[in-house]
Image (tube, rainbow, N blue to C red; front, top):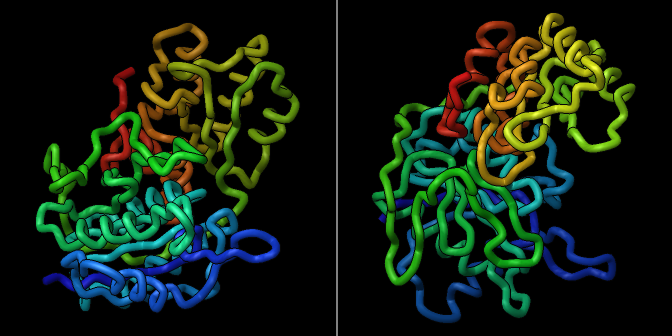
Length: 340
């Protein structure tokens, strides 16, 4: 039976009530063992638990934690057959996407999971999600990639999104099939097409000023948009646009600001606000103008994956044509690009 290492970062799954609301709490390994001992042993693989320090609500989790996670994985990679990361749901999709880009090709599964209700609370989904992740970690058909297990489904990590705040089926991958579904049995609709290999454990250089998002909305301030695009510390920007990638023109002023940023070396990635579908910059004149401004169509990449991808690529030192090439390509199955 495979050996699994569980890395606990914090988040709802291990939280306990306090006068201020749920807070991260140490000692998850003991509490989890007690819950698993109450009934059937689930035929689970042997697993160990390491608690990251400090434990944190995932809303407080920043990219520095991605480097710490990768360092932990590196130090234990040779001693375990699979890895489960317990993570808060608010930023789980960002972390799963980031680790998929940081680690690259894998020869072992890395599975994120968490819960909507803490372990031990009434109607908690924590035990089911943890058991599912452990069973998938031990399953020979589970793909060797970064994935996310939640509510009886396994999703590609860089395709996942949190789509519900109140439902237990909090995560989905709107533009990509589930990797696996857990019912009476475990089914794998299609084999992973990602190549396996030895992971890259190198940390990324962190720069909080390098990446930004420009969300488009009716009544948005052109002045603020131009100020962001003119910021000399900006290295990559996600344009969060309407429909198939359309922006307002502002009589050409926004496009001129985008073009100037591109000429200064800022990588511009266009992502749709729609949950399903993709960016097609040539479909409308307003979107087609983005091609001339140097904006890269992001296809059906999620906002979470786009931010993570830009952060990791810039953190690896990529720039210019090499950066643009990676942004136009599916590095780890995160998108399907539409030809322009």
